[in-house]
Length: 195
Ligand code: SAH
Image: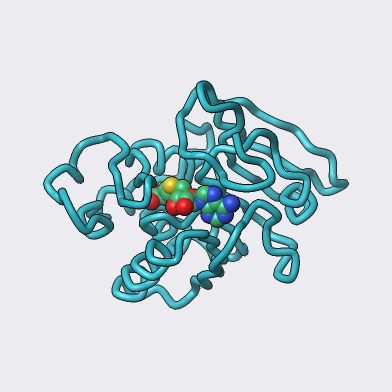
């Protein structure tokens, strides 16, 4: 677990029912594994979503960008622990379902953006936090640029077989440090940085 483990995030995790983010096979939601959500995509493993949220060190004063809304499960954590969230998804029906779910949960601080998030969202940059939930061949230059000073990005990087979860920090002078966390397996970030 992250050395900056936030107990509020862990408490939120235990109250958020993953069944709510699935249309089918809801009985599988209790398993700590990724599950299909249609269109060849998956909802992430709950323990990994918790871990990635901890690694992002979110807080309610900050603005977050998420690439890969999927079911909206990770988005709910970001909505709870950010001031504002911009979340991008290329598969419109998935985005519509996620939007409906987050609305039902009562979040009004999430902006849903349809399209390829490989190049981020320059018109709303900089972002204090960036969460990428699909695997990239490298850290996208555009996302590094759009990360605010003292910002943190969490992103899986690698190839189709082996990926590593990276925690990327930008200091106040713009210097970047990359912390390799653990081996993971995500669906590809489609587009310019596709694995
Ligand atoms: N955190 C999500 C996991 C989603 S899987 C959840 O727990 O449900 C990754 C998502 O990234 C998929 O929905 C996929 O369609 C989306 N995706 C892949 N490449 C993308 C891109 N270039 N831009 C935006 N979304 C992308």
